Length: 565
Image (tube, rainbow, N blue to C red; front, top):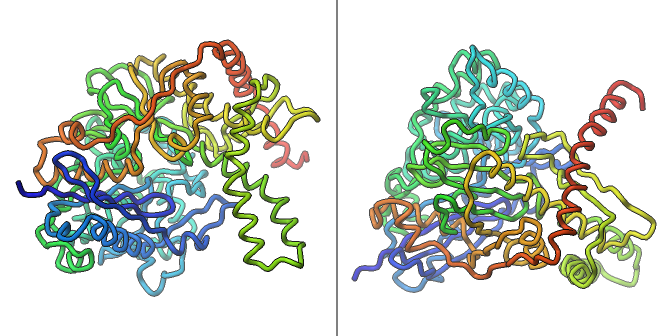
């Protein structure tokens, strides 16, 4: 039987990962990853101002290298058997596009201008613009364009474009349209680079640009013009979104040569990374897939009629043909999860680096080696100490270090730690931070169930899910449900490969392809009933702190802005 190979490529926050899979049984024949070189140097970012931009050349260089390496790892002759390729990316991660279909940062004039690059999903520089978008679109001529997504976020499409319009009007005047990273790659691979022919994926259109059939598409031109005429101009070039797994086209001769593939390879419509990850993990109706990494994304699919009449806009977003075509995709999540532990590691690492910097008898390489060794071990050591110790009932933390995504979006919300004493230890503070992330997950789950969404099982994927048993056991205990962990190392890339298999015609639809190709369960964490009472009490303290934190932060902010401090 002829081999049926497909390639899935996942563009994450730091790197691109490719997998070569046999679509018949889901076997992975080869894989590779490549970091974004400019991003890893910290170029074009200012974390203090929540500005995170990525250069398009980072994507193209990493993409070409990881696909070629994955094919080499798959063995001799693998490239000749590849039928299709599809990608997923972070989102909303848009960039301004010129008439040639290239991001303006690929033009000499703007090659080092962060405003002409891709605005990464976690870029929060558009907070003010998001507030304006929300104010107009939530009540325009008796239409609430936000009713399927809830409060509009600075991480999303219209807010980022409006921010660019305000801070870089000259550059924006050169942009014919804007495009999501997830849509630019398949468009580029197939030569569909004319601004009005760009591929637009249904996940991005619905969740970030507010496309919905109830509105007849995007928000009305009049509504967008009220915010800024530039937004209406961009909307006029948008086109009709397509589903993941659709056929975008075939590889251009140039990209076939660059990737070492045939020109008959089909390019499938892709999606956002978390959505592809849900498909790679085996999402289906009533199954929640929780992507647990730097942030979390909670994903469900449900039939449209089941959702009619349910008010869920404060707890999740919903978009047609999202995740699995034919269903409504439901997305919720936390703005920070693993990022919180990375922050705490940096705090713990500061005195080590400061001490090493003062050691004149050590060269720079040795200092870096010692600092790196400490950094690699510190979280593991903290987890070990926490697993041996009893649950600390005194310290309570909030997980809003990067704002609150759901429920009830508030990007101005901030983290907090309460109940500290002079006896508090580093492991106890770490445990409180870990509990805050898991309590945030419980709050989202309970909000979904309270609004009428049925969840029968929970599958987790991602780095934290696979590498942090202390936190995953805590999640099972706090939520009081079994937590399954997918065995996937590259679940998002697997989901992209599933989309590719559908585009190639190997399977008729995504659910069928997923049954053959999705990852299996590696481990299940069962809740420990002996801990339930303690965690329930701590969860009540967490909710109480939630209720008071925003009031306190608003009062402090008003004092600061009003000159009271």
